[in-house]
Length: 275
View (cartoon, one colour):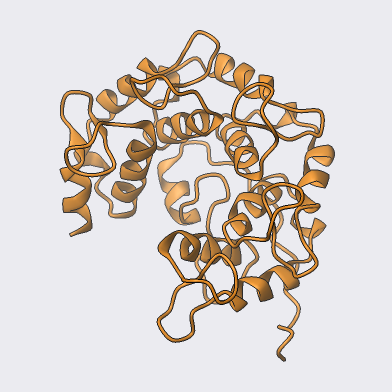
């Protein structure tokens, strides 16, 4: 059923994928399709050269990437382009140096990144930029301590993380913030035990799943990011997730010729507060 839905969204003209059958192809859904096919062991059925050509056609002279033919630019698309091409072994199809130049043009004085040059720093955009630089092995261009200080300040007294100053905590930032800290080897800069307790408090104990905050409705989006965040913290019973690719570590090591360097494992989690 899952694979049928993926292939139903395939656009034969471009080799890319839309959000569902009959929708225009977009770089976001193309990465999602590649990730799903990789998880199911079916990447060989994909015309990798055609996908790479589609992504390369979206790169602009300043190094940025359009999301689709309509021309929106966002650092999300920089990460998506580089991540997708890396999984396909096709990074050479785009100008990586120009892609890095655009990402650095989106850096702010607080060390973080926005969607475009001059845009406000946001934890989600930081992941996209840090993740993209990790994919291409260019993390040395970052001011790591300044950036990670901004990230660790996203933890609120209740233990969760927010995406910008003065915003509410949200389980999804258990991925966006924690993945960047993991890539940069700074997981110990926040209180992982309190973050773990916050994520677990957002579970729906009757129907399953995880919500954005306690007592809200659970959904697939927050369930994925909650579980992924717990995996980054070394929560027992979960398969290790790669903080750069958001895929199982074992899968990334099979697919990517030069996987990102592995940081030291997270410090041991303290007992839950309920214990």
